[in-house]
Image 1: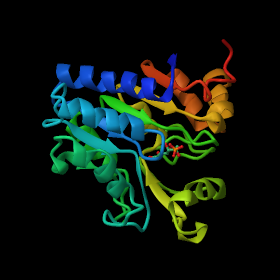
Image 2 (image 1 turned 30 degrees about the horizontal axis):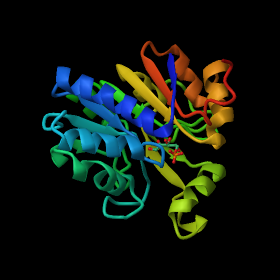
Image 3 (image 1 turned 180 degrees about the vertical axis):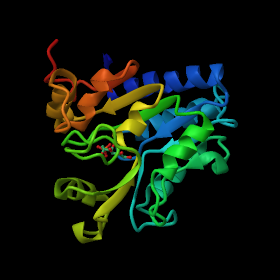
Image 4 (image 1 turned 90 degrees about the vertical axis):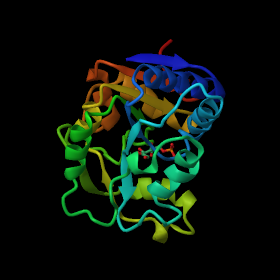
Length: 239
Ligand code: F6R
């Protein structure tokens, strides 16, 4: 695992360079997307790089990590809506090549793994991290061999995410998420964490034991993970 520490702006640029390098070497690369506040500076940077002609997403496919159960893509808090607004509408990707798990048809969620496999597997998976160590919506206790599945969201996760909704009661109780195995199947992974509130969990997942109590700790066992942190998120790490 390689760890880079710089300002929030700088890490967005550094992470964007990884995409530029990957896609310029493999124009039909498969990327894995994340939502939340953390990736927004990276997505802005990717849009900038695309507009400047430094990278083209024309032949790229994208598979997102997760979606709220019960929200369709037109709902302004759905992750499909978020991805269109924050990234897909600003780059030259074919929208038909962008995939987000369905929050409506959740009957056979591991079909999503079959789709990813059929497409050739994810080359570069982007992750954020929850304050409880979740990746995607894989909450503490999730089995490391899990594939895409429906989860009940922890109360704490719903509270944290209620900042995007009118009230906590509007936050869905369930989500569909790539499993931990789905994430670990990606050929390379970038995890970004920013802000003081992530410092404790960042220390735990990088320096602590590999345990299902901290789902992100499994990343220690992946052969190609890059972690991008701002100074605040990195502040509790051993130098
Ligand atoms: C989002 C996702 C989540 C977030 C995590 C951090 O698709 O999978 O694991 O990455 O909850 O969210 P932010 O970036 O809002 O702190």
